[in-house]
Each structure stands twice: as C-alpha cells, then as structure tokens.
Amino acid sequence: MANPRIISGLARGIRLKMVPGEITRPITDMVKEALFNILGQDIEGASLLDLFGGTGSVGIEALSRGAAYCRFIDLHRAAVEVIRFNLEKTRLKENAQVVQADALHYLARPADRAFDYIFIAPPQYKGIWERALALLDAHLDWLNPDGLVIVQIDPREYKALPLQRLEQVEERKYGNTLLVFYEVRAADQANEA
Picture: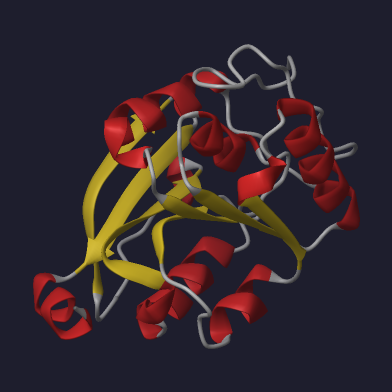
C-alpha cells in the first residue's frame, strides 16, 4: 500500500510517513476523499478530535482543508512520533496537539473543550469503537451540540448500539471500510446548547 497523501488544501500532494509495523490501519485515500466530500466546506474553521490517530492522515487532511484545530490521540509512541513528523512535513503543526494516551481513558475524563468532529478509527475486531461511542454518549461535553462523530470500521464489525444521547444518522460503505456518522439527538442538543 502506498503511503497516504494529503488530497486537498495547503498540504496537497504531500505523502505521509507510515507507522512501522502492524499497529495502525491507515484510511485509504479513496475513503478519506469520500469522507471530506461528505463534510464539504463545514471543515473550514472546525475543530477535530482524531482518536487512534495512527499516521494522522485524517486530522492532517482536515487541517490542510482549513480546520482551525486538531487534537490527535494515540496510545503508541511510534504513532505519536509519526504524527509529529507528518505535522512538521506538512507545516501544519501550529494548530495541532498530539497526545500520547489511551483514547478510552481519555474520553472517560471531563472534557477540556468540545469538538465539532470526533473521528474514531480504532484497531479492528476488538469492539473498541463500541466502547468509544458509549463513552462519548455518556460524556457529550467532548462534542459540540451540532457536532458529528465519525466511526471508521470494517463492515463486519458493525451493529446497532443502544445509545442514549447519540443517534446514527448515516453510513457509507467503501469496499471493506464502513463510515458511520452519529450526532446528538435533537432533545439533547437543546439541553446542551
């Protein structure tokens, strides 16, 4: 697989360094382009929390397209180092923060800010995406009331989840990748505003 590239914006065409070994599952350029076509101009000026950051490809793409801020979380030192390298290479580190932490423990703490987008692309087949969504459902302070949670999983992992305050609003399948979109239920939006 070729190294992921930045598709559009300030860092367009720059190829990103990959994380060595098998600890990450990079998003393909095709899926990333589809994702940002869905988000459109809304990414400009937005804030993003990129959980399980990996190479940083999604968050860096968001910054390249005009996002105001991105925080990357990854447990693995190798991934954190690669994200920092890729931010330097793309000259987008000014509006980014990289944190080495367990994303599930991180979500269990009180939020220090709310994000417009939260991207979840954890290791496959371990149910981690379900636990991350359940934590966000319980800690909505991480997400702006009109924000969006995007989950990237293998379609075989998907199942409807019994969420209280988040609801699934869309899903898109691209080969062996499924993007699932969640937003705050209307009743909870009013309470959070």
